[in-house]
Amino acid sequence: MFCSGCGNALAAGQPACAQCGRPVAPVIPPVPGFQFQLENYAGKLRALSLVWVLYAGYSVLKGFAGLAFFHAFISNHFGNLSDGPWFNGSMPPEWLGQAIFHAVWISVMIRVALALLAAWGLHERTQWGRIVAIVAAFLNLLHPLIGTALGIWTLVVLLGYRNSTLYEQLSWNPQAGPNHQVG
Image 1 (cartoon, rainbow, N blue to C red):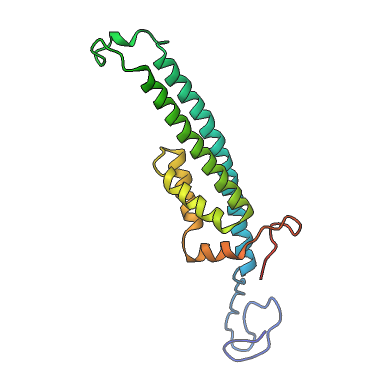
Image 2 (image 1 turned 135 degrees about the vertical axis):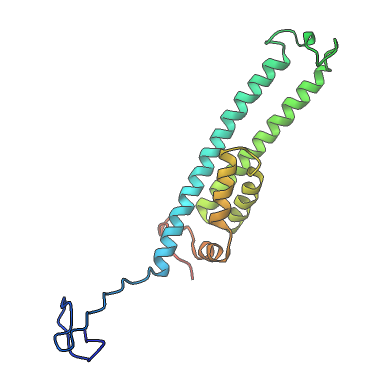
């Protein structure tokens, strides 16, 4: 190492130049390399895929609870609904409750399937998995609290030029491990 002022040779750990008295510039740490960024991004994808699996389980439980409540409500387990001011003495047709029940059940199952598909695609680091996760994220923005937070986090991790480039560089090969690169 040499002095930046006079060019005199400096010993390691010397705080200032012995000839001109100029302080030695501190050593600048190296900037993290591309491999570090890939490993960091791979960790984010692993966490995101795990949270999508957990969200699918949460959606199933929430769907069962909501549908059980709805079934009890429609089946008059909470008392006679015709006594309230909203029915004016006549009950809605029985098929309407069943149709609503089935429509809600199908929407819950589609949401769970989409969440599991997004989790699997992100875990395997496939291009279709990234697209499915982005679509699921946009659909989950409408679900309060957990769905909105997961949707925003997914969009932040997957969208943008830098993130799409990092995603394309990653591949998942079970024999080589999560840090295996293609090309």
